[in-house]
Amino acid sequence: MNVCLADLHIHTALSPCADKTMTPPVIVGAALAEGLGMIAVCDHNSARNAAAVQHVAGDHLVVLAGMEITTVEECHVLGLFPDAAAAEAAGAEVGQSLDVADDGYEAFFGEQRLLDADGHETGRERLALATATSLDVDAAVALVHRYDGLAVAAHIDRPSFGVIGQLGLFPSGAGFDAVEVSRHLPAGGEHEAEYAAYDLPVLHSSDAHFVGDVGAARTAVVCERPSFDELRLAVLCLEGRRIGDA
Image (cartoon, rainbow, N blue to C red; front, side):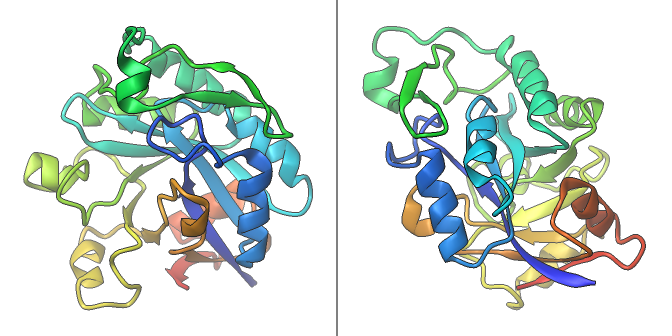
């Protein structure tokens, strides 16, 4: 087995709150410079830039297509998918529950830039990605699973947008595959045991919105090679694969 360092929560410039420099070439370059073997692109309520990042990475870096769904309770649920097609199909379903952005949306929330593999803008997303969907937590997890993805409770240590902060408790019946803690919670710290008590793997991810944050937190994935299938085995702790602290 090998140890792959992974940052499984990175935003591109499609997310309105992300810096406009978060383009596919910049993200891949930053991940390689940080010694990462696997990343996941998880924009808000959309996966439309993930394939471009995968194209840039080629064989140099494994890029998983993901999405950060905002539920009706204002909880953030990460979906990590086996390929870009599955992520985009899930994103299209999520998009059906979003309104079209009004004239003042971009000025308030920020640009939502669709990018090609060279980092050039090909258009703007017109759905209001910064807003909540009509999906509750259970429905968001079920949607991720319907597209063969892994459902992760995002940054559960945060008072806002984490499931505990928003709901007042951890929804143990929702069917999450893992929980994620933010880069502000040190790996191996005394508080990590609190989140490990849910009997789910604990991922450490950067939630990077700026290039300098890429790799600021990372997860050690013990696996044969970096891939979605190997990550799934590690999350399930099967066949010698497992999740650990980097």
